[in-house]
Length: 139
Image (cartoon, rainbow, N blue to C red; front, side, top):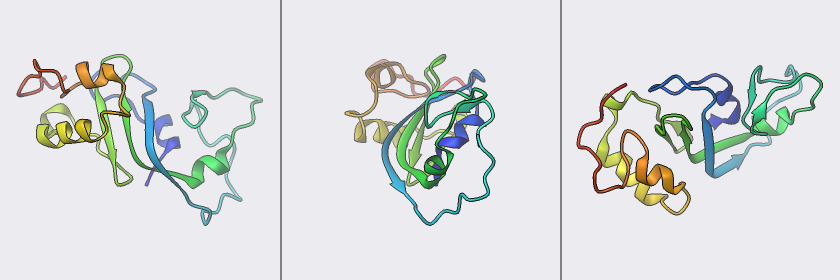
């Protein structure tokens, strides 16, 4: 299952920007995850759970973060507007040339009420605008 802490590790495949932004549509709390021996803070640079850079001396809710799985959502790059779907707890992070337009458009339509308008109109590699190209240019 996708976790918030993953955002401390990944960059945009298109422009290499860090950190990415995440919008959660559906999450699942899992109490049975053992967090007794974790080193805090778990994330070294960016806490996606609190949506802020990690700072020395700040208390972070690592136990709660680790127990929260992301079932459905979207990651996006605020720099190049490339987006990546989270489906059934799995982040689908593929280069543009490997993406499936029909699947991406279906995802955008299914969650259009939860996805920011700028991603729906200008997101890469596919979006819902009429001028959306047939084949993405892989960057």
